[in-house]
Image 1 (cartoon, chains in turn brown, yellow):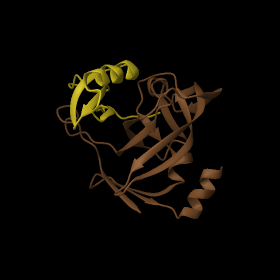
Image 2 (cartoon, chains in turn red, blue):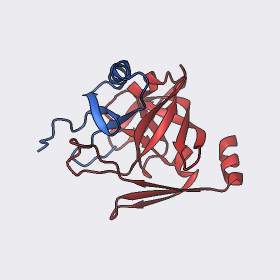
Image 3 (spheres, helix red, strand yellow):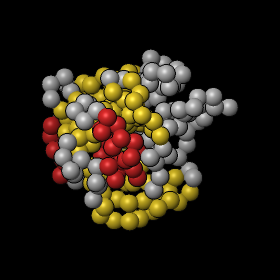
Image 4 (cartoon, rainbow over the protein chains, first blue to last red):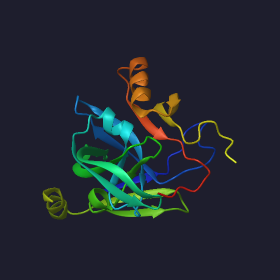
Length: 146
Length: 54
């Protein structure tokens, strides 16, 4: 299954600026899903959420820790979130480890562990397109077992 | 110099149109949900002109 996305623009807000973002639905522990435009970032080891989104979905925190970025060491909360991405028919659903930064001043970042290991990803910067190709069900099962 | 007042803000979209904007994701989404309880809403962060490095 191949999923194609165009870089997302927001009417009246982005002034032509577009980034490789895709819509992902996060499961809320209170029920239902919330859709968020998420940035695809191969430079990030993990999936990163802003605190407000973690609060909104009522994410259960398993561990408090720290992570390192270009800005230095920052405190993070770690947990597991459930996601889904709309396909032509139905959804691609998965669970993954996430790290929560204590700020809302970041987008949701889809990093390598938990996201890049599920898809073969092509970012076509020139044409402002993102393509996700699902790995075979066998590989996806192995990743889900991790 | 950033000339877009929405740059860096979170927005909630309904059918690709902004219905609320702000800095606090949770209160923003809850406000939007009150306005449109049965609609599918999308959260998005408006990009800024500045390079983004984490």
